[in-house]
Length: 273
Image 1 (cartoon, one colour):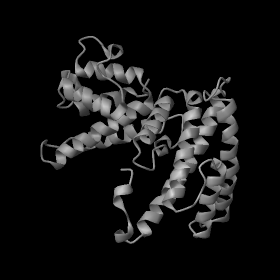
Image 2: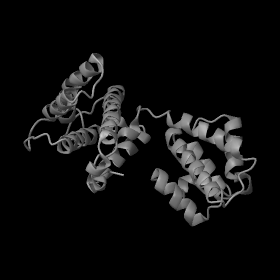
Image 3: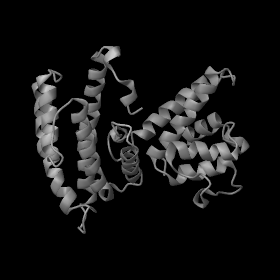
Image 4: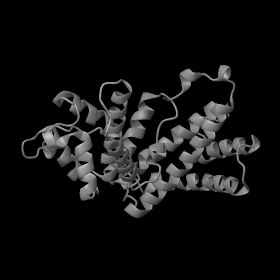
């Protein structure tokens, strides 16, 4: 259930025009498509039917049922949609700027309520369709507050992610090379290229090699990869946070590398976005 104060609910309803039973200028079809594209959830599902089943009432039910993080994503998308219409001159924004800004703040607060920090960092670093579906399924498990059931998929994600890093930096490896060995090569490459500024960050990355090695045991003996008793909830969250925070840091490094290259040297077709 999205954690909203009475004033926040009133601000959101005013911004989205919900008092009329509508949600912005969406039709039933476009409303369903928009919510599904942003969240992966069908707003026409019976669990969201409420009173008159208007778009506004379905959204009210959605807010009551879904998590802070999920509704935060949706509210953020509504704000972006409103801003795009302003830029195209399709709506008169005068008098609504403050309400828009308040909704942006609310959405940012709600998105920070995920049980896993930097969960959005779990995204494929290539355009491989299966890799992207894997990342999406992992995030869906976190959104459902089920980190323990996604540990095997998170391990698969890390393997694919680190292998792609090695490919991107021309670091040779053999097919069955352990994931901790691959990550060790990548960390050594960063250090040799003087892309790490502090000794402490360097030590954290080096220690992460051992953590990734230990992840193999969790995947093989405490996840649904095999017929195992799965790891408990709190330790699963700890593992997810460690992995997502490490990947978030790697993203900043990779972005820094990309920006430092001559534009003519960058193969933009390989970017995963």
